[in-house]
Length: 553
Image 1: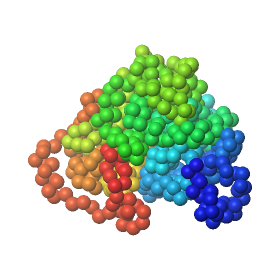
Image 2: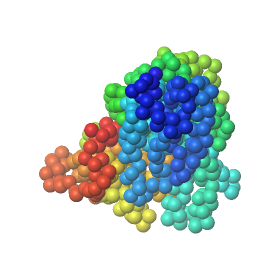
Image 3: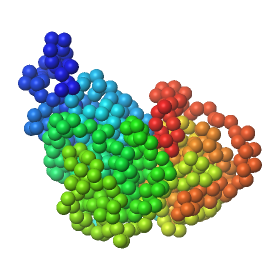
């Protein structure tokens, strides 16, 4: 066993004495030691139940003959961090989580790992760590939140809550109306109920083969979630026995499967940051161009919030991620020969799986669209690419042209939106919010939700070198690369410039002559860094472009 280095023989006697100090018995030390990485905390609704998930995992490990050893991982609540300096600390935690988990796993020489994440950056951070450490590992998340219910019986969710603020500033909703959303949008523990980033990544963990069936969709409050956790604890012992490791599962073909399922589900644009970063840890390069290639052949089968009015609990009842995979596999769009954490292949996992609700999971012959949920656009405004969740864009905004309204920070933009200074036809440009320029690449959920809440989502586009929450809808185009702080063309846009967006043609164009852009570039001076000390300052010096997954170099 890998852990023998700290458990066996006279040289390990000092190590054993410290393990005995923890209360472990000789019998427990003779079993495989399994690290249980638990992201429980008391500030993230999606993590408040993870202590119970961890206890269930540990029960499963013990039942299968292992010794569980729990240690923590941090997590930020993007919703609570939204709209202020806290959001600068969201994406950057992905690397902190990966680094700290790697350190704990290597320092203590565990034989296997069970990762218990749930929200946004926590999931990719732990997947990155799993790829780095490359010892038998399985994931079990805390599960999604149930949708809320308003007084009139309509279901609701966090994206509606953010849009309600925009509705208030547009005098479409009074303070009592906002308060009703406050008290209804987030009714239980769990990752927020739509196909936002957390649920996107938990579904893709299942899709890529690192989580058991149901990992992405079983609601947090259902007892089936505890049973899943126990089974994950049991399954890790099989993975240790068979020495099945993350890089045996997370192959290049598995990432292409994940991208295909991403397109069918209509996942968050943040997956275009996280999948390349996880692949990088596996020694695999995922390009923006490949994403478009996969999108072109993959129909969009699901319209969960914010794209539609269905939620994770509905997807679960319809058969979950496996039912979506079964639709894709029958059409020959997945490599079903691949090994997964079940110890079986994708094909074996999908045996007997059926789509139980063709209204929630559209069949292949009746998709929402013939192409996938995410599109990568390129042009002189984004030479290296930018991304849009096209499944959440109104048909009338798929092609749009309008004057640029330019802001050098999220705060400037949101003030103008709330003041009614943005009108139909405008293209809002928010720059110097990228990985380096932010630093930290904040999500622009407040501006996009304000636009939607004011009823302008079918008339106004928003472009940024920052990123978006999975809860964003509308013509919201992010990850513009190169970013403004790196001298990208988005830093050269001036108020009133005409910007043309053509999502079906995958194009984005700043309608300014090359000579004019060259003249502006010659005069451009990079602004002083917004933050000059601490972790964010170090992060800004090391982070790569969004089109590379904002990995640290």
